[in-house]
Image 1 (cartoon, helix red, strand yellow):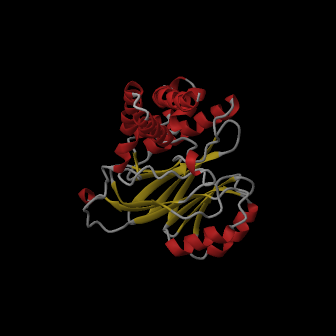
Image 2: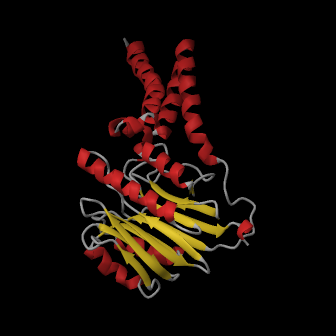
Image 3: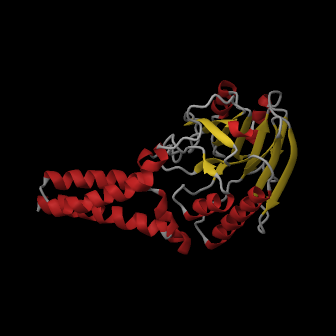
Length: 315
């Protein structure tokens, strides 16, 4: 009896670690299927645990199934730890960018403000902002004289703070009104386009429609931009999701975390379920000097901090 109480969960875990990633990869066929794509780290760890369990029980056939799950999920996870775009470069830093979904109900405004002052990013994208947050953040406005806000920033929106001049701003709203996609042009000696959005989690048909409209708008902004391009936002989608893969494919963008690991940023309160949904993307005209997660600031998301340099080939 005890044998089967161990054997049955391990067998289910083995099969699930093979079936669920493959189901997730077919997420372009439907939003429900896509939900299974976001937990590759968990599938990998579960496959490793099941394989060890079957080895200890000397169930060699099932151990082989577990190893297949390990190999499959390693193929999805391991590439994120290799291939940095900024290795062995002497290019000077052009821009430090910080992305933080602050969580609208987070009362620890001081933690976010202290982090901004400690890290001194050139550009800060804050998401899930409301009027209380805007009031607290007024203390950094002398250091960040250039701002762009989404139309709903006083209730549940986004704001971009910048030390470097922000010469143009564009907003694209969905057919539902809010939320919106922001596109700004930054002057760092040459114009850089930065696109930011925070689509809703696609948990209903209405939210999924809004989600798709925002992705479509972000793709258009990035495709139409001249010069170097950046993207930053809580995409409510991991890098294994269909929407993320479509965005990077159609815009020829690259994830700043490439070579620095998966860097799972959400949710902070549940480490076992944590995945990467906060993304900073760049085109080939940038090199990434460093990409890392910031400390817990009281939000359900960890900050993402990236140092960029323009590719030496441009100079």
